[in-house]
Length: 413
Length: 222
Image 1: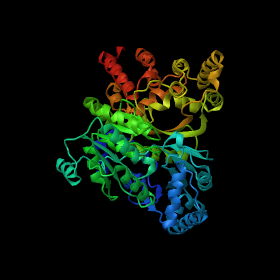
Image 2: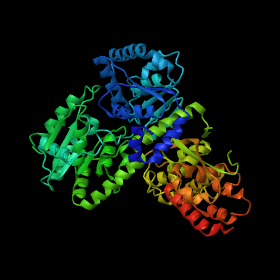
Image 3: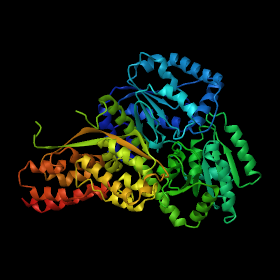
Image 4: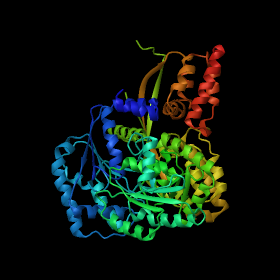
């Protein structure tokens, strides 16, 4: 067994890795290409960073390509992202033209690789138009939507639907996100990588240095929300919840840690709103971290007493999974994939308002044993369901399913 | 040369697929139930054992859970939860049972028909990929040692999924034991008596392992 597979076997269980190897046998040598829009920053890049080498270890010939474009392209795809999440955005024709042009130009660069691939996974809207430039494609093309598209803004979805309808299949993170499309829509929740810098166990000195670097007091309760400065993550609502709870717990501290992915031009505006809401409260720490600050994020999540993810819209919420893996109770917005992870009174609490979040913060900080119990339950729940190994198993199953047609039961010989 | 009487341990992986059908009230649930595939109904009873979800489930079929929490109809939820797919392995009979329970409720309270649910019910189905682990059980006594080593998905395939494949709706292990004539008839009967409906797959594995250890410790009662 390779070093990488052995490392996963140590965490997820050797039976889990055996299972992957057996499934992968029938796909040995298959050419697989993933395409997304950024090599660093954001949940998709984090998943691909390990999913790709691990798939290679299992004998599939897997590679990862990144689409690129100018500022207008990123403005367009950000608007599409917001539109899919339900925001009523108007996308001007010049931005759509930039989107089409960027896809056409990238198709030329990737043509040989994508035409020869047995399976192509196109992640999110950014590279979705590549397919129409590949008339001689030989493999199966799958559109992987990581976004909460349960109530999309119709003009945006109608445009994008024309791009994705011709795919052989699509993947959504939750059944509620699936849309009416003329092909199979697989449901695959995302996952975290337990061996990545963001999730690996850290030595005590590294934990201590994070407290010192950011001026945090290790003896006072700490709330942490890690996510991009995006209105759908409701960072302002988190500050409001902190203020309400602080009336009862005066020594409370809050960290809002975010970074900007290279495809997120709206982050600046939200950050300004957050700074204004925080005012000059020295116990609110707004951290703008570089995209590679994975160990710092890891340490902050581990330093937290409670992790918040008070999103009002969420694709899946991998920061929730990360926090649960670190045995933290999570207070999360009652939306998207957070619902699948945060189970009231078992792994944390689902909330709808800053008031609700404040109430649960007070409850947990007064019930330390309960907090610990929820943390342990959360970690096991993640081990069973949301590690990279489960995610990879479902990709392999999907590929085998697509190769063998639409039957319920496919028996490999 | 391979022993033709050996038991081939197989394993499986399930992938979930959206059917595109959704229901926002009881009337829509009923209409969809009439036309969705049997695979979809089966998935909402058994698929949860192999898909990511919290193990401590309140109801063991998705219809009952949705009716309780999204429609807020506790009486109907209890009646739906009482439908035991183990009693009838014909999915069409189960479909009729569900429809009858819903119709009874609508006869009692017509207003239930249009009450909107808090969240939509999404009809799903699954696709099962089955592969050979290349492990073989040469004789029934191997079950005691090998069952704890089987994956939970292997348990699903041989003990749950088998009920849709094996002619008499039993499971693969009972079917194999019967190939030895009446020698392990009692064990086969004990296997059939295990009710998998309220257990997780790891609990079923434990129950099977304990049964095999106890049985073969006593010399197989041959």
